[in-house]
View (cartoon, rainbow, N blue to C red):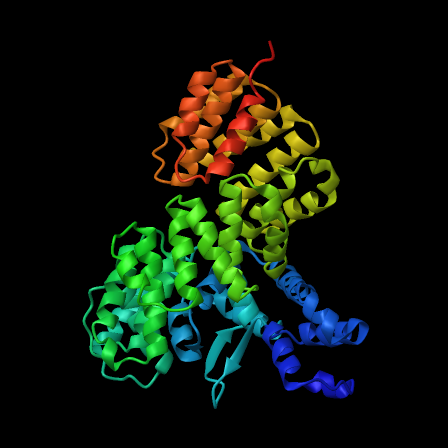
Length: 486
């Protein structure tokens, strides 16, 4: 509002609410928004709101680029909390002098802010917190152990005056032991722990189900909207674990979230046509439903409908240009287009963004994308294979996605030996994923066709599950194009 008043810009309350929803706490972003508003007007700014988001994401990336790995890990630790008292934080970092200087630097650069009547608490800026949590950076072991120690000590003391210690300790104890019974655990702490377990702790979906069941056992005493949020998290985890209870619970959720959850369930179950139907129902009611748009892109990529996914993948990327998974989806649409050289500038931009994201997951996506760019856009097969093999030498586990990229390179260059070798490797992996299983049989059918074995190619196409009939027919037509010409 201050910058709008300075520039004498008059907006409706709804327009102000829209602009406020784009802000993440950086003064520079507010100034940029007002300058953009003056240049293009409110109607165009609403259509191009991604420019405000990109400015913020680029600002965050620039701020964090110079930090050491240890500093990023400490910031990841701080980002786990809504807020923390300075007294409690000092207790946990008393033996690590470098962390104290970090806090002073972060406050000076607006990465963190002090809050409370006496500025006794500190919190990470929302934009920084979103960015850091998305990167899933490991917390320093010494701080993780100190947090566990503080949480256990908290139970034995009777002083609960520090609200941050109360929330942080009970969340930590509940994360460590989801069966913990303690009357001091309020429902909101259960929900925050569920969200953290689902988002940041791999394969702890059964613990989320356990916590949700405990909260919902007293559903008659809960606010209806709060209960729905808990049940939403329950349904996500039931879907992830292929639990038959999913259908029972999802019918207790109404409206577009009911359709979204069914679409999510069908997508990860490999029921692509059902997923398309449900997710499109969501977008008919709410065209900008971001989670539905992301799921829909996944489905289109699953069935290799890259043109259908392209515009939506672009929108998703613009909404979060530092999210490696959204970059990957958009990149895939561009690189698999009929003429990827026409998108060379954008493809190179995406690769550069991936290179700047410092996580192991982003590194694999970066290597995969770089190899595809070298092979499919630059026509440099040797560099692509070397890029992949150099990366494989540094990793302990074989990645199915790396193997699939080598298979795609084999298809492009008609290298049957590379295809067979990579398919054999993929076949030895314990894949519990319908999408990857379908891809395995599709690429195996492609190899069969290239070797002139049409009957075996048809048998492998039939092993692909839950593809719409029109897509299956299109795939078979594509497979036939690989048969040797007589």
